[in-house]
Length: 459
Ligand SMILES: Cc1ncc(COP(=O)(O)O)c(C=O)c1O
Image (cartoon, rainbow, N blue to C red):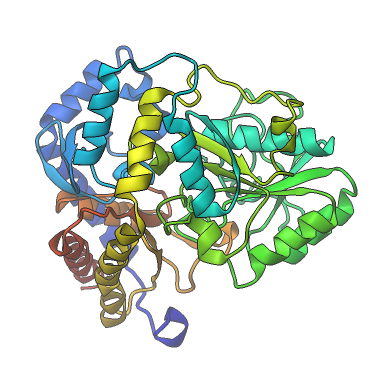
């Protein structure tokens, strides 16, 4: 039964605050070494971390090691890993086949800035999964979406990029706009402001981006009409994964592609998070719409830094004819390609996605809990990805998130962490990536914790 059809309880926020304080204290007690390490680390690593998002209150989780579906922090607490490095480790940690491939390649030399034979095998596999023939490699999702934007501008000779309000595509200037805009800065829904996500963007960066709400093809059509002949292309995460898991309405992606093409613009998918996690052929396969360009990264390299930009003959025309130089010292790095090759051809095979569906089925036990406790929450999943939205109606577009009180997902995160489940933090949502090596018991642990959590916040 959906939340729309059932009565839900009001959560007592005083109780939530008290539980956050208790859970924080319990976590700190288990993290004596982590807390002192953070102070040492701050001397040379701002905030004690290597990326600002590695720090989440009450303190960063400093990891020692991972094996299969489990990780251990530096205090030697063990967790089932539902974070999986933002979905990179959908194959599990230290997978024997990846370890073997990397060890073999290390002995043969790890960098030449020249292609090795593995690159073609990886590109062939990506072509099979997406139907898109041409591929180039890089080192991160940021590089892949940067390439996508540059290709769209170069191919059309137009200045503007259309993106979805509330999506993150990496930390380059072209797209660090309206990623998590606040209610105060975002402007009207019909014409969202272009809000820089950080200080230091090149002047004009924000003005070069037009934002529209997710799941609203009419808004995209209007944007093209209002910026006639100026929009080079649209980049979209086919499933929004940085505000929970927000699925596209039926027909939405087909229509966007049509609108882009009708206006002489390119249509690009950012599959950095959805690639290799929502299905064997990513979102291209899951929704049956083939874009002109696709950006992959994260799970492609099986834990080694890797990115890829691929496309159709038209999408990649400027790279094919040399009109645009897609470059990078570490592009197609031999170690990365060796890991990616085995990952795609021997680990993340079609069977792997059957296992992910089985795990997903177990996690749907959370829905029974929601019903039994009348929680104002809903759940969305696709293969390895899933999220719980603390809202009566599921999130349909970014602005829906503003209605969620941060304190409930924060408590849910602490609750799971203190009970042996590590998942990625997020201020307004609970989301996860499972791995093909999880046991039924690993998945069940999430559901059991969710049930005790439901009891605690409703009793
Ligand atoms: C959807 C999406 N695109 C692009 C990126 C950037 O990838 P990277 O951090 O590898 O640069 C991210 C990172 O989380 C992402 O979630």
